[in-house]
Image 1 (cartoon, rainbow, N blue to C red):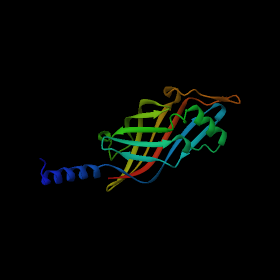
Image 2 (cartoon, rainbow, N blue to C red):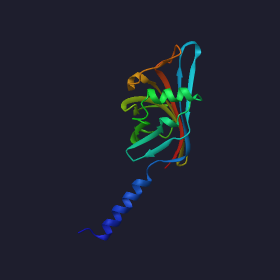
Image 3 (cartoon, one colour):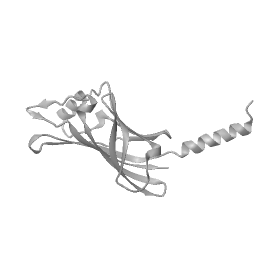
Image 4 (cartoon, one colour):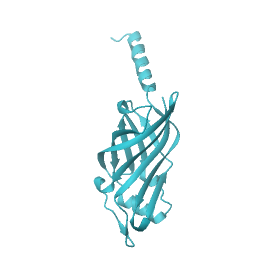
Amino acid sequence: MTSPRSLFAASLLTATLASAGWTQEGGGTVTFDAKGPAGFKIHGTCEKVVVADDLKNLTITVKLADIDTDNGLRNKHMLEDTHAKDFPLVILSVPVASLKESGGPIELTGTFELNGQKKDTKFTYTPKCAGSACEIEGSANLNLGDFGIKIRSYLGVTVKPDIVVGAKFKVKK
């Protein structure tokens, strides 16, 4: 039989652990930049970023449908090419134990998920912390082919498969 005292201790421990994680403060931004021939560039942005900490991993999640390139047809092509109907989320998951709260730029490896495929990916981030709050800014270089995404050619223009993704958000302990 479990005593009320041990139940209280277990509840207190659980509450302490749950409060030890990072919580998102405010919004955030995710971007991607792609290049094509003759200086052609595509810039995509998303202001709907979800940051979560389950005490094992910090995850940054974005819905592909929320990414905007300032071109409706390009947005449609992006959703088709990334199979967003079947795999609507882009997720970066990083072990919480590997995160550092000072210094920078800091290089880490996390698991990046896109188009239903996961790949260990190196990324760089810089934390700017004051007290229990941190502003995080990071980026990674990705090759879309590594995630099974076929690069579309439209009107004779083919974007290179290498892109740069970035994220900026605030978290608090």
